[in-house]
Length: 88
Image (cartoon, rainbow, N blue to C red; front, side):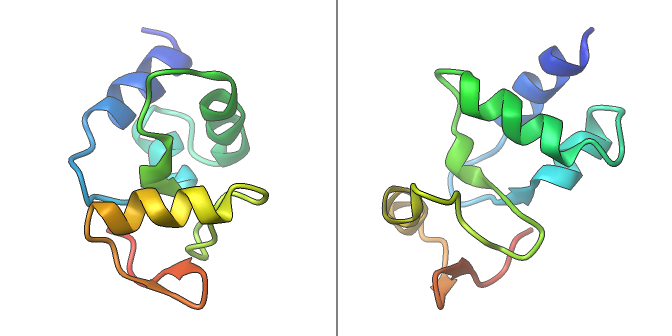
């Protein structure tokens, strides 16, 4: 299985309201430290619940903050000051 296939499988396995970081996805996919590659893959992919993946600081996707926040809030995720209050 390729790194990209692993990312896809991990992200598709996230339940509504479950939030993880790019770094956690990278580590689970077998490439610790490749958080940026996860973000790049999610940006160019379709059909994935990309909004369930955030930066380690809880920061939402730059330029898509409102959309990102609305999708997360719709799943019951708590946001504070424009960031995910708690990623798990």
